[in-house]
Structure formats: C-alpha cells, structure tokens
Image (cartoon, rainbow, N blue to C red; front, side, top):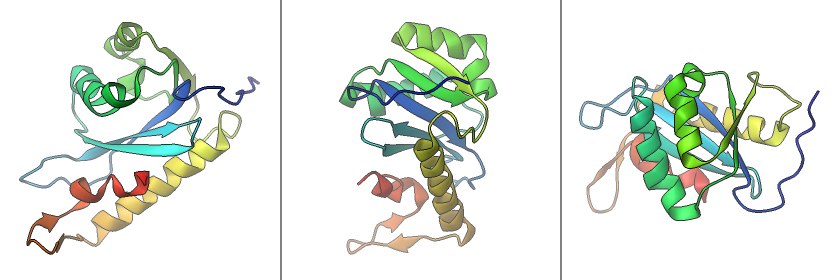
Length: 154
C-alpha cells in the first residue's frame, strides 16, 4: 500500500476523473465533465467536455482552463480510465511534464477527501441534469449545467 503524502505546494498533485452520465444539449453538445480536484486546497475544477473527445481535445481543454491559469502540476492521480491509460494519454502527460499515477476507482488509500468530493460533484451534476433544469437569468439568458458548472469551484 502506497501512502499519499500531503502536498507541500499548490498544484503539486491533482485527482482527475470523468463524469460521463450527463445528457448533451443540441446547442452545446457537451456530454461529459472532467473533474479535477486540487489536492493542496481541496478545490474542484469542473470542465465540460465530450465523452467521445480525443485526448488532444482533452489536452486543449486542460491547457486552456487549467494550466494557463494555474501552471503545471507535478502529479495527476487517475483511475484506469481508457482516456488516461492509452498511449496518447500517457504521451500527453509526458508533453505536459506531469507524472500520471493510477489508482483503482474509489480507492480509500489514495485520497479519501478528493474521492468524496468527486462523488459529491458527480451526484450534483446528475441531479441537476435529471430534472432537466434550465432557467433564465435576469437578462433572459438560458442557463443549464454547462453554464453553472463553475459554481462549485467557489
């Protein structure tokens, strides 16, 4: 059993997982969310993406939404999702200069706080989508899960 040490600096380590049981919208077509949990601050980042997106698409999303704002992290812990374990996925981590560590799904020995946060965020997204919640803001814009997904990051 490998003990995960507490990170000593921001973005030293992050947990990454996918939520793919999300209905897509015709005008947005996002049907998945990449969930990154910042282990130093225990803060989540939810990134709308495509269930069938290539690793290049995912790398662009991570670059635009995460790395460009926070810098490179040293280690990403992920379960053995095919997107992470593919040759292209591991090569992208080499390109970013990050170390990719694998765990089993919901492994309490990796980081229980991050795993619980990912479970909570997944449930929140599922419930929001299950009711087909869409609402209009004060300016008349329609909001759905793609537009409110950054709210838990606060």
